Length: 339
Ligand code: PEP
Ligand code: MN
Image (cartoon, rainbow, N blue to C red):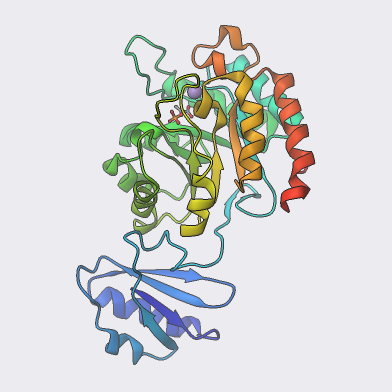
């Protein structure tokens, strides 16, 4: 249920409604907006006593949210959510470009990559420390050592860091080093992990599972919001189809669809979405044209020697080209991309 408060409702009135909800044994989520303040109610299995709520001072009306995902839906929050990390806004007018290697492989590799993507204009550094790999024989990541290298790359460049967490243990460790916690495609429906990360104060980059529907993605995000973490970014990273030239099929239609149903920022990952270096730039451009709030791409100083995903990693100069292209496109779609 959604409770709409008077535009000028006081903090005391809002607090009183929150207390009343909690006294019923439910959770209350305050949702400030440009035209109204609302309070989302979750945790109720049946209808909430509407009359009682509507009799409280400051309440205008109560509404049922029809979608299964409540807090994630635009019904609940018409205004776009802007996720803030280190002064960077994700989901605002400025496009966000997250770049870096698939894996943080060594101190020098990640610092070199960070300097290159920073010079080209990236605003967030990526790099995996815990790698969920298809084969048990593939490089599994350098774990905490890699988190330390990433933290050093942030020191050197000032770029905030996003890196993947694969279970509760890695999430506890990663929270100490990273600025954004990534939940990878394979873990989109790892509900234990989602529930844990929901309690974190760090923003979450949630990637769509390779066979997940939009509704499943939004329900996964609902685990995060209902658990108290409202700083969530959705990421389309390609799905499994019969098309086999590319590793996955980047489902660009998901971008406007997710934006219609949800207020959360949406970015794409054309690197994992295609698996082919040559397709990353065109699909990054297409993502921005489709309304994405940004892209995440893999860039490696020496892709031939990468320990993972070298085939899809851009050379630094290709990344510079990508940034130049997006910078030219940005005004056409009403966005900006600063240097
Ligand atoms: C990644 O971003 O490093 C990654 C493993 O991506 P995905 O979870 O989308 O496969
Ligand atoms: Mn990768």
